[in-house]
Length: 88
Image 1 (cartoon, one colour):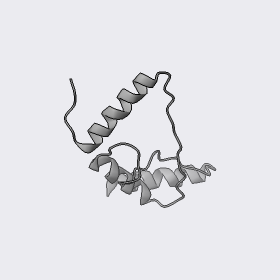
Image 2 (cartoon, rainbow, N blue to C red):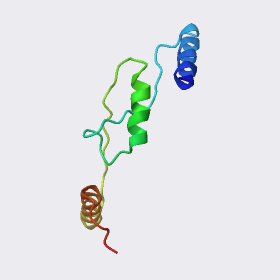
Image 3 (cartoon, rainbow, N blue to C red):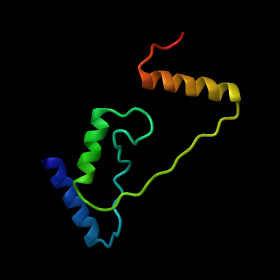
Image 4 (cartoon, rainbow, N blue to C red):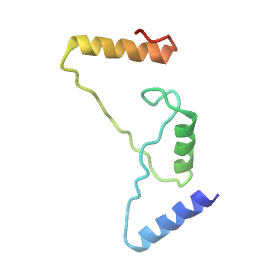
């Protein structure tokens, strides 16, 4: 489609300018990506993958300074992931 053509032209132009890398951002994979991803994010990742190239893992983490906040946050995320109603 038009989106692929535009991106491909950008890649060609960057190659002519001497670029070695073209960063497309995060790629989300169902069942592997942290958190709950939307169908839109999966489709965008498929679009990006259509250009080939290499994928490199992105490692990220969080630091919690409060055990209470950690517990509440992880409990909330687990409940959201399981589709449970939110506590008010």
